[in-house]
Image 1 (cartoon, helix red, strand yellow):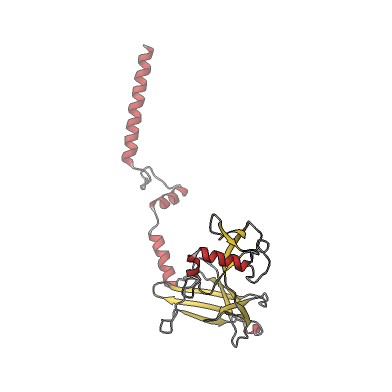
Image 2 (image 1 turned 45 degrees about the vertical axis):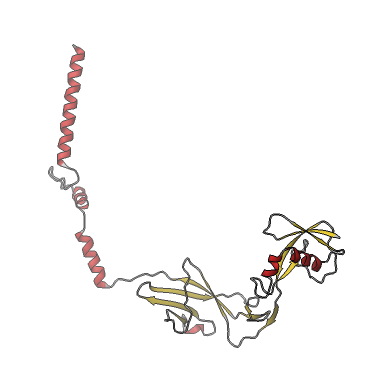
Length: 265
């Protein structure tokens, strides 16, 4: 009999199982399933991980070991377990072009699904000039609403080759994965909303600025021209506070003089 210590990567301690020699990966997994009925329920057809298989992890490669591998597991070895599921990847030649959009910024667009859903976003192609006929046009993604206002993203096509980019699409009710090549890649960046004022609004803004000129700025302008009088305080200081300060200063100076005279006596 061969003793093997197994555990999942998330578990802290190993569990010990005994397997008839030679201890193959399939034999070790069968012993683990017999010792842990909870795993069998999760791998059942109606379980949480239906379609997955229990496998040993190869300590050299870190990949799941083939259950049909005839290599024996050493006695008293410590192995890790993993749930794995294999897929067959097949190439798919799409009829339409698939475009990848990468959005930068803190607030990417949120698209809603359903044919009955109101359309909030519009995508349009744009060319900067007629001479760029051989180039792919830029893309604009625009949304206008009463609550959020106008939101716009400008997309520029990535010039790098997309020969190594594929969309891996899972097929329903099968173990196949379709590899769909990507034709184009666009990087979208948000456009800052800058509102341009009309001529009337600009004139109103200038008039409001003139009306709200503070008395301090007027006083400084008059002082720079040398036209100040003694009574031109214009709110820069409180006259009552100034008089109070002068009175207090005079009282303190008289007290100091009295003290000095008493000291001489």
